[in-house]
Amino acid sequence: MADNSTPHLPPEIAVASEKLVRGMGLVQSTAVNMLEMIGIGPFITIGVILSAMGGPQAILGWGLGAIFSVCDGMVYAELGAAMPGAGGAYIYFREAFNPRTWGRLISFLFLWETIFAAPLSISAACVGFAEYSHYFFPSLSHAGVALLAACISLLMALLLYRPIKTVGRLSVVMLGIVVTAMLWVIGAGLIHMNPDMAFDFPPGAFHLSKSFFYGLASATLIAMYNYGGYNNITYLGAEVKNPARNIPRAIVFSVLLVAVLYLFMSVVIIGTVPWRDAAVSHAVVSEFISKLYGSRAAALMTVLILAATLGGIFTMTLGYSRILYAAGAEGNFFKVFGRVHPSGHFPTVSLIAISVMAVPLCWLSLEKLLSALMITQIIFQFIPQIFALFAIRWYRKDIARPFSMWLYPLPAIIALVGWTYVASTPDQRQYVGSATILLILGLIAYLLRAKTVRSWPLEAQVEKSSTSAG
Image (cartoon, rainbow, N blue to C red):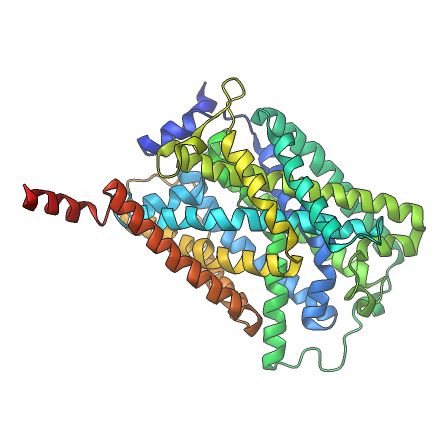
């Protein structure tokens, strides 16, 4: 019975969380995070990261991304342990900035961003899956890729339409497949790699010029996309057993384990496949296995990679669906999204909607989807959430914090510097502009809604106008 309690939650948020079941322990929570982290990118973005810096020095991007991700993970760990409810950042923004005033606006803007970011994230992973399928279907056209990606999005909704305990067990099985693929790559690479090839740096690789730092920022941005997912368990906070203990541990364990796996995998691959070939490959891991063990082994590896990507899409869709559910159940979004299955006690409408909304975006290119997604999240979620942590520590001492980040405030400051740095390159400026326009539209949408429902900051004006008219 204690597992279904909702500690540290405001009454209106607790109502939404109490409808769910705390059925995920530490193993399942860590698996959910690692599945999204591993499944959504490293197998298909190694070449992109090498291209960004023009050589093996791109490993710096993996390392810097790991540091920034651990620090940002500390922010999520503290907030997630303090307010383990459905929706994650949606709750943190609301409570940090005063739920009666600015908290309403900031949480609404996060929800507004989620309407766009969730489909972007899901469709990017689905397109990545479809593009990697070129290994089996080299003649697959752009329309074929888009259609396959759209079908994958809908398939995930079907697989997730079940109770959370079943989902947790399925996540562990999927993680086993993912780790098997990565350990195969790492083990084979350690046996066959050539250290001279792995560290075949081009002339001037470490010349500290403007282009070097721009390239490092681009490589780090892609690396942080690959590390992305350590926060997934915070969206499922209402479904985690002993959340004050398990949420921080799941975040820290998943980031550290995945960082080690990523670094080893990248080094052994470029120590076997020349980095100039890897940089232009869309299926470098399969080509790596083909070079060592032949086409049949490469086909098996491709199957494992596609399964890993499916696992990432699976957990990603799971997390995003809980954000819309929490907002609908609380009444700050369409109430239909707050519906749960009568016997399975899991969100239904939000799960289906998030998958359907991703379908049209599957016709865009993977590069555009990734950049648009990351910049939008940096502006709407990652940077504001760091300030939310500061606000809770300064102004909301009534909120218990069972976990405190180590060396506070250093990790939060490092994370803030990291997010600002990776969004500062000329290549990302167009997406910063688009995200700014989206922010302005969100402000307009909030004010229109505030006027309709007589909410802050227009509630006082509405009441005053009504009094004057009387």
